[in-house]
Image (tube, rainbow, N blue to C red; front, top):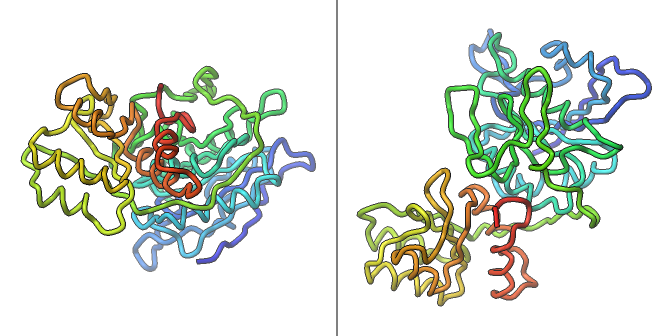
Length: 356
């Protein structure tokens, strides 16, 4: 893998309003149709002004870092997240904001992971992409890219308006670790059920300032470790001991996101409780997350979740599965912490991912 730098000539004047770094990782947004080969191929970002001539109207300095070969979002890995965090760290002082072009399938996972890796963020990191390639006539790529750039560049009283990791898609700016992909064939691909949008776009970009994280008082810090010894166990009626064992007894396992029913409820069959108790006794961190899109875990509300609370399963409140699994990776990588401190950290609202 290599990173190729492309400076974009937008005919900007000598005194630009903002400098924005675009990081292209892959995905539909950066694809065009090759007439000769008759299939989609990665776009040459040195020609982006030809595809998006509106960029010439920006008073911005734009630079693209293109990851080669491009990463299909289904293949995104923990190492890719760490690479993105390092790229932002290396360029943090040079730019006013960052736009990450990413495939939509795992964008919510990547945005969640970056939110934890980039502590005390004071500049926008806006993930966006497209459902239709930029080279097509009816594409959402142009509007998504143009608006993401505007949001990344916007300041108020000299400070970025949105100092957090976000997803911009189809007229909505969402907190990255609150978003989920919900559509595969429509332009409104993402939603955030448990937290309102940070901004909505129409004729103007209307920011909801009360929903945006405040500027941190501490200096920016980048974390360079994630622990991928984690798993997701999604419960369903009729789940068997063999299935549960295959996950909870996986070699090297250190953390589990337990996707439960409703407000955090799980089966009370003795075999299930025994397997879960054994998992906790081995020091494995278990985080309870609701399967409901608008769900919130309230352990102890019903008898079927009281068992989980009493044995030490951690309630995930209204966190998404995408934010939960990356949060476990982040917390478990803090090797200097004791088991009790890790549990306490998982329960904290670190980057706006839960509503306490």
